[in-house]
Structure formats: structure tokens, C-alpha cells
Amino acid sequence: MKERTNQFLEHFVSLHQDLCPVQTDILNVCETLLNVYQKGGKVLICGNGGSCADGDHIVGELMKGFLLKRPLNQKMKDKFTQCYGEEGTLIAEKLQCGLPTISLNAHAALISAFSNDVDPRLIYAQQVMGFAVEGDAVIGISTSGNAANVEYALMAAKAVGAVSIALTGRDGGKIGKIADYSVIVPARETYRIQEYHLAIYHLISAYIESEMFTD
Figure (cartoon, rainbow, N blue to C red):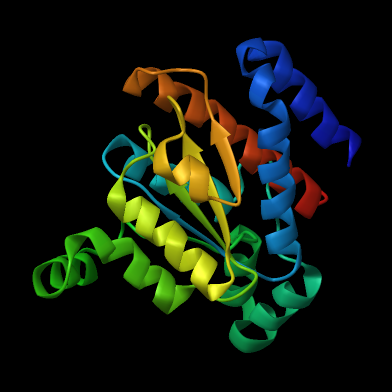
């Protein structure tokens, strides 16, 4: 682990001592997702309501620079210049390296069609079947742990050989039991669970970015 990454962890622990009981679980998720990205995999995320928004938020942190700038490598910059000249050079200077992350909440036409034609409880599971392959990861976010569509998405993840990860609260619910890795935060109120989730996925994003990129 890089010293910078270790400093992120120490700062997180100092701010969130009430999360010490799940610190090992959080670190396991960080390492698992880092391993997925290092091996060329991608991450799929799903949830409902505020957890849906959290999924979109995570995508925003991983698909572009979060705490680091993540410039393109010189080989890629040269390709832009070779193909598009001066304009390509300018474009390449602004683009950043992204970590492939997909919000399963974002496909309105597919979600509405599958809900109407088949079963609304399977809207995320269907996308897992289409997007995920062995070695990917699927993150399910549910404050109660009992959202059926999230549960079925994690079941589909296991079926295709993707790692399943649950972010939840209370007693963990169904997804806390079936996921390969679970972070069950010590709260019962929905808004408090979501506040913990925000802090946790910011740490996850910072951890992965720090380990994956040099600057």
C-alpha cells in the first residue's frame, strides 16, 4: 500500500471512529475493487432512491479524477495528436483516465421496458446479465438490505462469476447475507445509514485512485 493511501485510511479512521467495527470490511471492499480494476474488470452499481443517487455519485468519482488529476499517458496523448493534430493535443490534455464503472440506475428506456414487459424486480439483474462477466464486481446499495431488485442483482452477479458487494445498514438484511463482501454500518435510520455510506464510498474512491494512479 502506498504511503498516500495509508494516510487516507488513517484520516478516515480518525474522523469516523464509530466505524471501527466495520473497518476490516471496508478495507476488504477497497482491496477487492482495486483487484477488479487492476485485472481490467469493471464495476456495476445499483440501488433505489437515495441509494440510487449514491450509485451515480460513485460513478462520478471513479470515472474521472477524484482527488488526483489522472492525466492520459504519453502514448495515448500521442495517438490523439497523430490522428487530430493540434486539436487532438488540446483534447488529450483535458481528458482523464477513468475506471470503468456503470450505474444500473441510468438506463431509463431499458428499465421501463423490462419493468413493463417482464418483472420490475429484475431490472438490475437483467443488466448484470448483459454487462457483467467473470472478474467484474457488482455493488448493491440498500439501507434496509432488503430491496428485492438489489438482492436479485447480487444473485445474478454470483451466477456470472462477478464479485458481489453490499453496502447496507441495520442488520444487513438479505443482501448483507448473500454478498461476497458486506459493509453493514452501525445505524438504523435511513439518513444516517446514507451518511455513513457517503463517507465509506469516498474512502473507497480515494483508496482505489491512489493505488491505481501516480499523480
